[in-house]
Length: 201
Image (cartoon, rainbow, N blue to C red):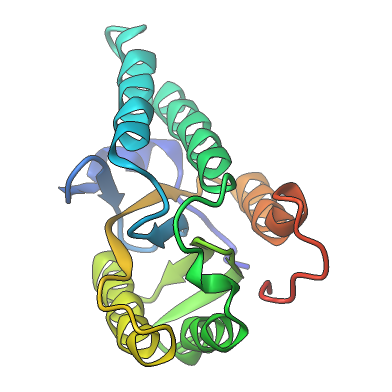
């Protein structure tokens, strides 16, 4: 685990990117909890409802503090995960061959491009807790994971449209938050009612 995580007052130095519905805050040296999902895992009306709920939470306070912003993102992540646990879509990640390859891909660059603290391949989405190394960018890491495994998926399950374009990430704010995030990811199969699920580490 990293000795020092990002203090609250450093959040003002984040780079903000957006690729669709969700903004992404990125800061050199930060650790992130990430959810990325299959393209058919959330119908558009569900995604839009989640977005409206998030915006409503933000509008309840005119001038959000950093802590309030973080709490809103945490509440949104739980709602998103609950909707993903409904297991909409084809749930291609139930295929053992494909789940194995995605797990291998996550671990391939561990301690070369990033430190991987926890991961879980669920039936229609993936959870990761990761800290990119200096010079590595989160969006590029996600692109490499998704690009490679999309090609793998086309040969295993025969689909050419695989991952959703968007992903959701949260910065880990301190050691307690890191421990909680790791426990959440490792406990995700049980939370979703999956027994004997092996694609978690």
